[in-house]
Length: 196
Image (cartoon, rainbow, N blue to C red; front, side, top):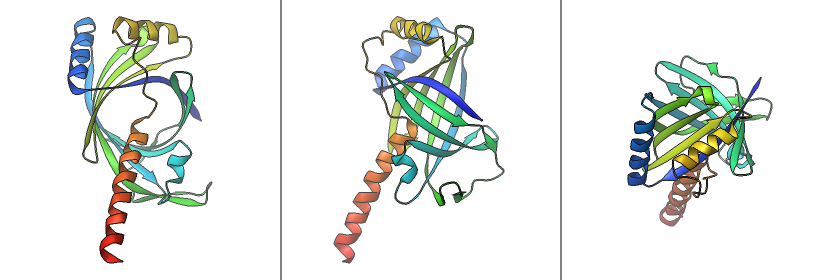
């Protein structure tokens, strides 16, 4: 079964992110904080990433599960189709994908410090994420909404002063793989220079 997810994503500089966090906490006291780790898989030629697909294992508290995600860009927001979460006991080095005739290998991870503000009765959730991956730290707001609640979600973005800010189209996996490829290509070029 596929689960649809609708979301706006925004990236911030550290100080702007802190101000936004403080502003939301003043307005909405109830929140939940936790750490989650996404472990990303792909082929050596990044086939899944090139198809806007994410294959990840996510560790959250004492649970570890695997999930596929396919992102589709829709207007200013991102629509994603996610598979159901399949729990696992340990993190595999590779995951076979028989439907594609390939194996995806573990490439690395993103550690996220997440604060969730649940506006459930209004049909949306705001998540503030501090993400650590491959020597990068970035600061992100994700606003997930259910069908029919986009207007309320946009109203909240307006109240936070984000109505003029352009949503960022790249998710955590895309940003991870962008940095991974950059490091991978630089490393490969250095090896060629020294060993060939």
